[in-house]
Image 1: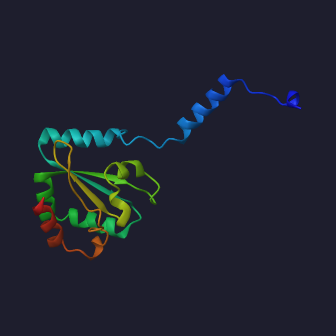
Image 2: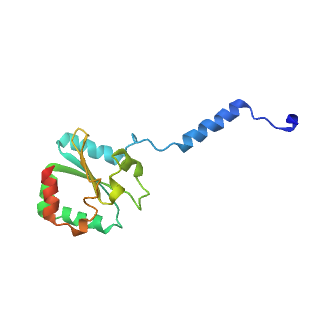
Image 3: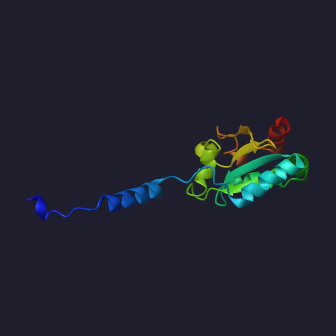
Length: 149
C-alpha cells in the first residue's frame, strides 16, 4: 500500500519549509525607511530632539495638529528645538512596523507623537492618546507640552 504513495525528497521539503518560514516573518523593526534615517541624522547633527508624528491625511485631529504646528509662535518653538518627521499610518494599515518599533503609540489614536533625543533614545511618547483629540486642543496646550520636553 505504501508503494502507491509518492515521497517527496527531504531536500525539497526542507527548501519549501525554509521559504515558508521566511514568507511568514514580520518585517524587522530594524528596517528604517531612508527618510526617517535622514531625520535622525539631522536631529543628531543639529542637536535637536526628533518628533515623530504618526498620523494620516484623512484624520481631522491630525489636520488640527498640523494647523497648530503652523501657528507662528508654535513654529518658532518647533524650529528652535525640534526636527519633525511625519509617518503616515494610512487607515492603520501602513508603517505599522515603525509604530511597533516605538512601542505602538497609535494604539489609542492618532495623531501620536514619539519624541527622540538627538542620540536616538526615546524621551517620551503619547501612547495614552494625549493628542488623539487635537481638534479640541489649544495652541497653549500644545506649547505647554513642547516646553516640558
